[in-house]
Image (tube, rainbow, N blue to C red; front, side, top):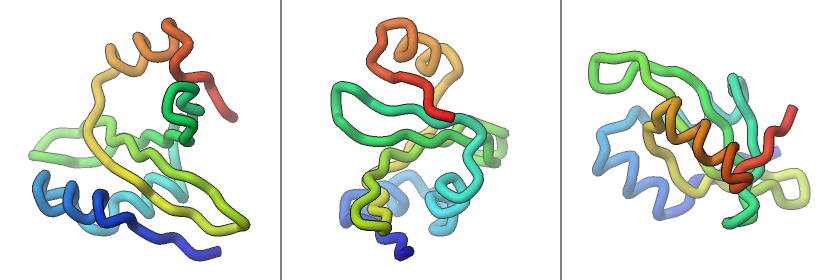
Length: 94
């Protein structure tokens, strides 16, 4: 299995000053997993240190033929996670 980063993800890592290894860490050991019904992507979330605080960090990714392409990353609040599940935009994956 190969994990690749999109150009968009690489730009977000640079702009937001997120460590380069965070997307892979989140993908390999997520605390929560969802499917985004609007975008058609998988979502993984893990609490990590970001800007001197422990925050939920979210990645959106696609799995294709055994490989993984991570599309984007950003911090996300508990409230936003709850709102996206209540609205059924995200459905829980185990």
